[in-house]
Image 1 (cartoon, rainbow, N blue to C red):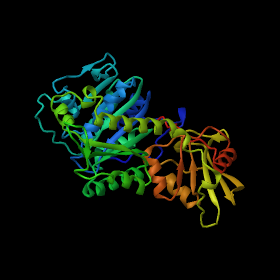
Image 2: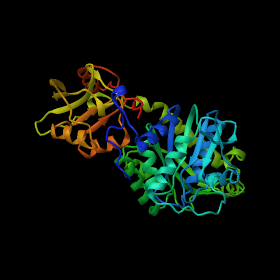
Image 3: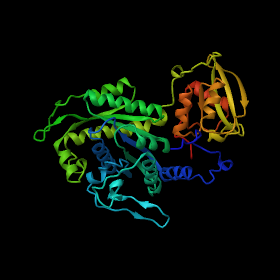
Image 4: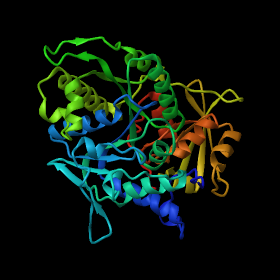
Length: 418
């Protein structure tokens, strides 16, 4: 697979993708999900933790709360979402503009699964990495999702091509990591959280599934399989913990019947646990844009070899340029003792994959403030020891740095369009 360029964005009319089909399909994915407010990748470090069941019931519960939800299954080898919703035999329909309509499940929830594309539900999908990546991008780019509050993406276990492709292609994506309390699962969930850090994918939170056993007769929850391991790992790795969901035989029976548990047993203790997870998730997502408002004492300022903190800000017409990969100049702002010492303006080299992160690192840059930046580019900057802040407003460089130093710079949604 060809590496995508580190910019993740282009400078308005100054950029032309030419006839690069890979770039075109990436742009199609971005266009398809542009009107979706919250995009969540449900993932796990290992199989057998009930990840797909959690994804399905979260999607249904969100729809029951009045949110408009899309649910897509990118587990190409073992898709299960369609079966859990009783949609295994459903087939997709097209639109006049070559888009595909997802399959309706309930008023506010539409679904897409690889299973809905197979002529026989028992057919094996035997594909290598490039074919899987292309299929996922087509999944996401060809669907007419329209305006939605949530897109839930159910990925296969592990940190392979599927979650990596989605993490790199969808801006504003956050991960929900599902685990069970056992130590063997917790070791893998640590890998999932580290994967998220390496690809600059924010973790919305950890869900501890099968946390105890809910008696089908009395409803009491016993710690048959242990409890609290997921919460402990979340605290250790400094990511949010969303809640515990007990193992309930009714959930298994509902999945086998193709009717999600949360739809029919809304008053049970397990349904109550799902509602706690949703309450915490909605609160965290609502507060996410505010998390970058920090106390000035909490602002970390790494120094370079010269003993200064050097900020890089991509410029166009003297203010921050949304698309750093094709900006006219970079402002290099030096800060010492939390005060601006000097500012220089430099012209970047020709834009090639990986060049800008290395070039700025060689110039002693410790932090870049940008409007838009692809997930792959963020990872490259971090690999070069440069802290990344994205979603910043179009202000003069010194004002951006002063707001950063004062803890008032709000770096909201990634402004990258490409």
